[in-house]
Image (cartoon, rainbow, N blue to C red; front, side, top):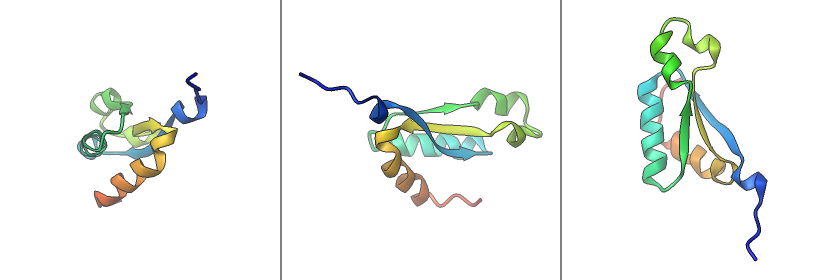
Length: 81
């Protein structure tokens, strides 16, 4: 019987970006490694470009089981903070 671990499949915040370009690069890097991810607040970055970070930025979300690997991949991209 297959077991389902809710905690492993929970969607969690991996990283927040102020640039939609960096967010898309990170998303592509994760997907290239076979990790499922989504971007939240992506549309708000286009609607409210000024002061967007005050509402949370673009959030890169991953499954909790992939969090460590996703963090390593994003860190390897060397975005300037």
